[in-house]
Image (cartoon, rainbow, N blue to C red; front, side):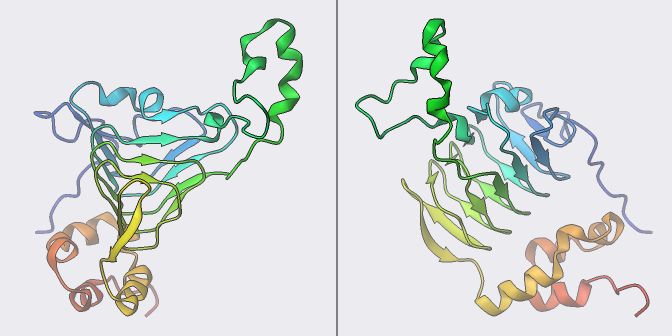
Length: 217
């Protein structure tokens, strides 16, 4: 008898652990997109993710997080609204204080803007890691605790430090190519459920053997 897949629409997948929430059923902002089963863990208030963990989200840039990502307590995404001018005598953002100073909002028009922040699938974020604006993090990456990610992270790379640097790759270049082609996170839930053990602890060869047969093959 095939196993029953988990439900990606349940806010708290572990009722006995209210500190863990799935982000897809939680997020309401049209500027934040999260894939199924990506979760956030926080003992204080994980449901405040949009306001406490996505900071300075004043502009149109999007935060995109893939499926099956694990976000430890205190992970923060800094968006482009955090930028200040640094080319003049002062970095102070006078126009936001109101009064006649607000006539100078055009001074923000040419601030650095790195665009959307994009996280792939199956990414693990350690405790209190910080992601700077416009960073792109590849599938299967690991972000060490308290890292400050200022540059893009390759697929299946492990980064750590402030600023974060590549520590090593989780798999060989050949196996990374195979894993990306397999894209297990896009498998039908029923098939994925049948092969959870292989996905978690098997080899790349075993994962290839478990892959669903393409329709029409």
